[in-house]
Image 1: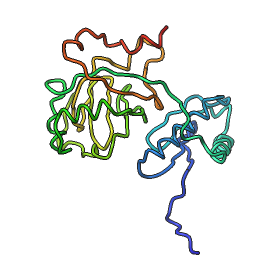
Image 2 (image 1 turned 45 degrees about the horizontal axis):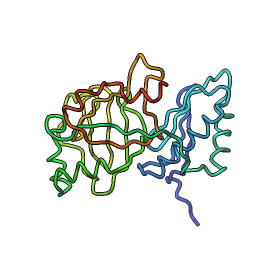
Image 3 (image 1 turned 90 degrees about the vertical axis):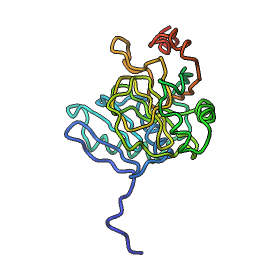
Image 4 (image 1 turned 30 degrees about the vertical axis):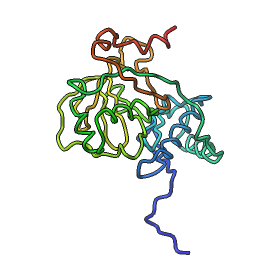
Length: 242
């Protein structure tokens, strides 16, 4: 059998400068590849090897930052390949569960009706479908504390918008590609905004600064605008500070 020399074999491990490496599980996003990235992150952090400073999972990869004076790239690469050969537990429970209050529609979710039209359902069905769905935080990225969550059912596979909104507030519920993007600070976006949570998940005076992390499970709960006004930005932190 003739092998295709241009075909990439995964997972791949490559260096990032002299103090980092990246483990890539595939070229296109899938929930299975994300589970592999999170499972490897979990395994490495169970007993953090000497010399590893930080691990950062993404949708289909894991970045590992290390001290090159303590551990070499080659020895770390061999260690990670050994972990991968042991068959990672892709269904391991690696996070916490959060119920996040949110207001849907109106000024807090100005593109709710547009999303309903794209999905060919009513706006109230968009809301019930979103609040009924448990989603996993798959990665943090783009802006401080911004969570990429999913996957939502196939009916939510709608494209990004054609225009860029120069700024949406932290706590926005942004929809596209079967995912919810949940920013923790103001940021530009091309995703459609269907709601707004009064709770933020990034705070410089907290330790850690980011409340949500990859592997956490979240579910959104509909509340009224009046109720939202009574909820403080850091309410979600309370349970985990006791």
